[in-house]
Length: 276
Image: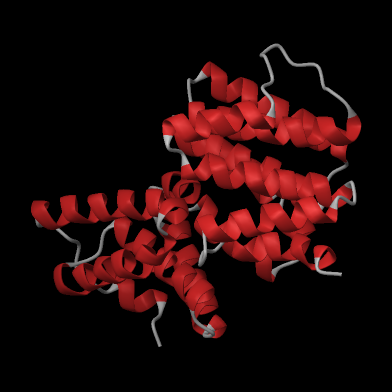
């Protein structure tokens, strides 16, 4: 029965050690969203316990939203997950740090939640708002995460045609290169590769590396996120080209790397034709 009022009535967290602990847990949630999603319930639950014991802070909203996301992915209690996410959104709207929290929780509240439970055509436009929120406060990293998620959503949901999706991926890649955000740069390049395989090579200033070259980069940098993005894009590309045996092989490869994860539902969409 958690409500927005319950959180607003909590005292402000003032203990510096606990505030630093919340910031650290916030960072752990951000990076484990891809690399170790099974840790999200542990970290987010700890953030909520600290909130109840020592008071409310902006990172409490991150903990609440992440805990709602964990419930959504790992339990059948979708109703409670939706409730927690809605409470999180109300708290964000009332926070003086609204723009920071909106961009920080882009993946949790939009990409991993709303995009699944709501019509995607109503959700995709939110990414532009989130991107501008992040740019407004100078948060380049989360701004690019918002832009990258916009590219992914447009490609995988068909919210825009492939040529438009290709242009979005190119713009994301070039902006990531400008701000030296290599992780997003290479992931966006994977999107450009996938679009190129379907509609032809777009105009781009940077060298676009092949999937094989990007896989080598993912291996040498130990980037689990890039590896998963590459597999998903190749699954989609091969599925649309009706190479279902390749889809099956890539799906199994994805399953081995991420046996239980929020992303598992994505490759299941493309796995079905390969079993026919």
